[in-house]
Amino acid sequence: IGTINRINKTYSDLEQKFEREPSSNEIAEALDLPESEVKDSIKTASRHVSMDAPLASSEDESRNMYDSLAGEENSLPDSPLMDESLKKEIERVVNTLTPREAEVLRCYFGLNGNPVMSLDEIAGRIELTRERVRQIREKAIRRLKNTSRSKILKSYLG
Image 1: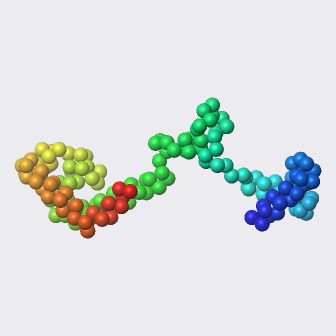
Image 2 (image 1 turned 180 degrees about the vertical axis):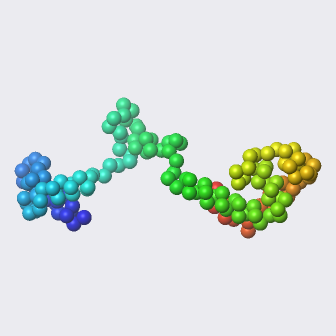
Image 3 (image 1 turned 90 degrees about the horizontal axis):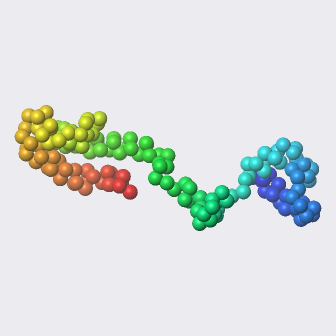
């Protein structure tokens, strides 16, 4: 950073002195540095661009970098990590239920790689009536709404 600052100051001084942009060789001679180091430093210290500045290649001058970067097709880089973390938290919370309630919710919502199943399919699987499976599902959901169980999951809602 110190070298970049010295190069920028020397660049400005030489620009005023020569009334033109100085070459990297002239900056190197003024600072007694190798020209390659000056070129590398200039390349590294590229100028900042405002996100609000209009895009040069766009015919519509109201478009800026935010428009280009913000798109629904662009996902957040930590999205897969968040999904995995959410799955673990859901499983942890579901495991606090009774085994029957947990199985009904896993089947109904398709958790842990299970396919999503209807109440009739779940009833056939665990040998209960459709209505009893519905009651178990509703009771399990009510229990999950308990603040101590759902507090961590609510943080994933944003």
